[in-house]
Image (tube, rainbow, N blue to C red; front, side, top):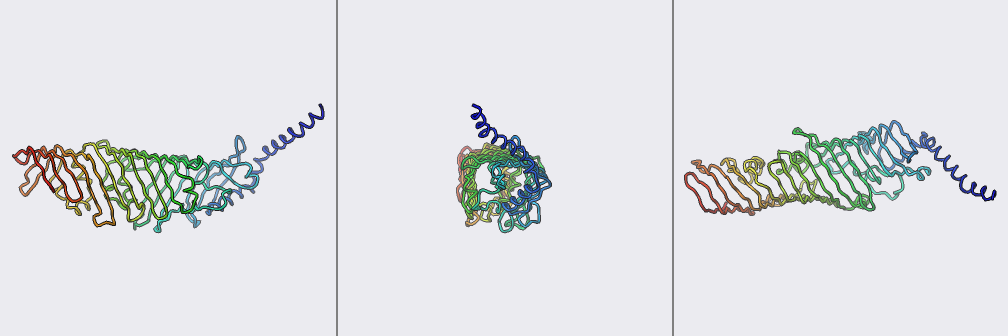
Length: 414
């Protein structure tokens, strides 16, 4: 019996004691200057960027976590800052660490500041972070970790591609989580966009195929849902070739929609479906698509319906270049007003075609008024349907007053 107990002690208790001693000594080993230098060297090797930090500290209980203070990651050329954060937390895999391999399970950034830029050549300054490598067992980049989270961050985006003047937008109070589940990469993004008329909020959720990120040059697809409050769409027009339609939307909108973003080498497209947008006065439903995204050949298509709204607000939002190029000046000269509803509307913008703008659909008009002709004859109480095709507007079921005359039934064509 004594020999049995002694054998049990050697086989079980002694290994446990050795393991406990190893765990208790881990903080001393991992907090050494040698391991801090290892972390920096592997991070720089994987990111291909200079990494600076003020202090690194490792905690062992309840799990191995490395805390990095005052971290700075520089641009690929080593001059400007790309990312800075007060604290960066890395949950580490213990056994690779003992083999001097830094492998992260989870990465968390506290109040980071990130600068994302797209240069005149169309390349993003983060594109080098997604280059596929043969060795996948080393230090994982922050954007490709198993789980990444950002708390109260700031992201500044600047775009100089295809424009003499840089376009910029800032996202504040960014809270985001990116997590791998099987072959899918799920994400949630929340941010505040400062605006003169009041801050907007944007929430994006979705998922993306893991292979689409890890395979260099491969295409992919991201799907999800977006919700925004008080967003000024005109502010984003410069990023979409100074889109004339977005530029005319001055009122802030609340919107919700599902989306699908597709990309392959040399092409990107965005489809918005199940769209509901409102500025408190009119509600728009439907969807739209953007093809050849982020290129001078951007294509735009939309299929929309609306609730009734003021015609004069629509006229005021039409860009001057559209009025001039399509001879719509009479809309303003005639002082048109009334209530209008888009029963169905299809709009297309194809910059490479001779007829760049196409509009089709059916419009209901009520309570219409205007002044027409050289004698400025007033129109009032106008009601009717307008059927818009590629080259004409058909007017049906027309009633109303023309000067002292009352029209009980009419139709026309422009």
